[in-house]
Image (cartoon, rainbow, N blue to C red):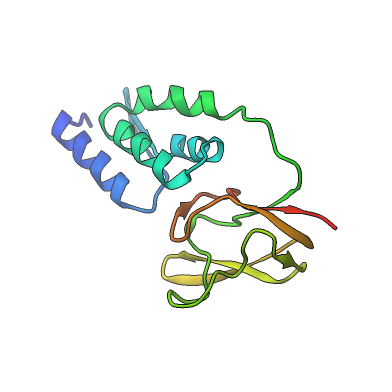
Amino acid sequence: MNLNVKEIRELMADLEKSSLRDIAIQDGDFSLHLSKNEQVAAPVAAAAPAQASAPVQAASASAPAAATTPAEAAAPAAPAAGKEIKAPMVGTVYLKPKPDEPDFKNVGDHVEKGETVAIIEAMKLMTEIKADVSGTIAEILVENEEVVDYDKPLYRVTTD
């Protein structure tokens, strides 16, 4: 099974549009691995996650191997103080209960363990994300409606 350049580009476009993070195909001597995972590291170190992900996505569509280097360079950022509330699954994160309502939490708000802080939509199912720590929201690490990967930090909380 050898794919031509047009078929590989179509696979890249399909992967970019889908919620899948990567795809691997192997048949005898032929092997192909496409991944969007490199964009996960870049927004963590960037000040504006939504803006930082766009150049990485464009780079991954035209040259996946070249996009890996900037993301890996951004990965060893020093961790900030506090505990993180992380995404337990891949999906689209919603920081509001409904589009016309205020955010679940803002910087400076107090959060109790077990309190809903976000919703993640995966495969048309809405899952409430509950805080696993009590404290004060020190930082919101994602944008509303951002696609998040498993274990992606959503909030940084300073404990009381």
